[in-house]
Image (cartoon, rainbow, N blue to C red):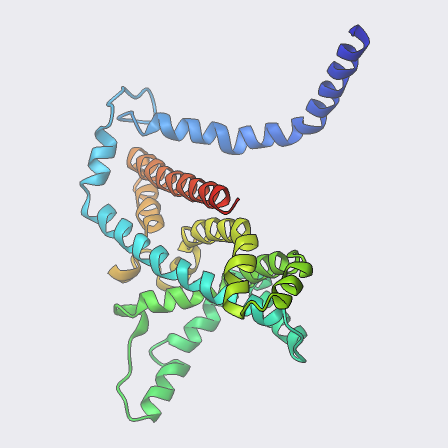
Length: 291
């Protein structure tokens, strides 16, 4: 018994030594800044500040800029995430079949993942600028030009950029999930005379549920990181329709209002955690229901 305990302690010590660099890095760059941010969000100043409770949170929630940024972010996420999930699943099904252009399509979908953000923005600016390609086509059709990034249409452009940039990653995940489904189930369903819709609902969708939950969570997180493209294409103060939470927090940082910045960040993180928890709970309930 004593030898077993010593062996177990040795294994734990070895594991801790291997994990120590990652744990130290995670603590220094994530846990400590998170704790400092939460501390700043309940103080009146960052240096020798006094505890003010939820005053900073109340100030943020009562801010018109924050409410506008939050509503735009929710609208963007609520539209772009379902779109990218549906399109990713459709293209994954397409690539799962034997097509003569399959290799070309895979390259086309994966290519945006390795293209720098600045290059992406430059390309989309060429397309959607006032003197860009799309307006030249519209003018050629005897229609009026549209200032895409200075109108409510700017959110459509942002959704298109988001989908084009991230769809390849989701397709890879869905394709891996589809290829991991045992072929025997489909063969058995064919023998029993099941239709395509029945096979998709009772075989494909059931086995794709964990992958779908993961893809949805990653897509939501990526939708909250669209600030980089928006900032490069529209600047500090874009059109009201694409003024996102990250713009609000960036402006608070530039004005050195760290208290409101950290309070807004804490609210955003809380919303993401609630969404993640709800998705995981629904996924567990779906699994138990199917079992």
